[in-house]
Length: 170
Image (cartoon, rainbow, N blue to C red; front, side, top):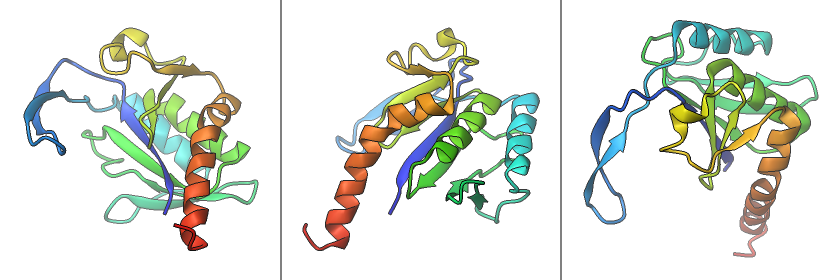
């Protein structure tokens, strides 16, 4: 059980595809993210190497150990492919070093960061016009501290839920 963060490409050319609404079954047109540029993908790979992650398994999963003693599981499927559009981090804790890692990955890939409650954040490197239609309320974060502050309430809510399940209170 984890508090999930998704990194989504901020690149959009206007392409759409049909998707089925899982609640209503209705077919809708959804915007398609375009892949990261070669420079963005290389920058993400460099950040991961800086944290000691040099490869992921056949499904794109890896484990990152941070200097503060924290760790997190990540998924970077297609990281070495020109089709790389998204990634994820599965948090079981939230700390300054985890928030700094999230910021560095988002900044390197010019990703939109979306938490499991649907809250969107972008670093200042993401052009607002590229995401305004899809994420009109995206919050601009300028540091790991900003990400920590933005995620804290949702993480605390998730932690309380997790603890209630583990303790048998639900």
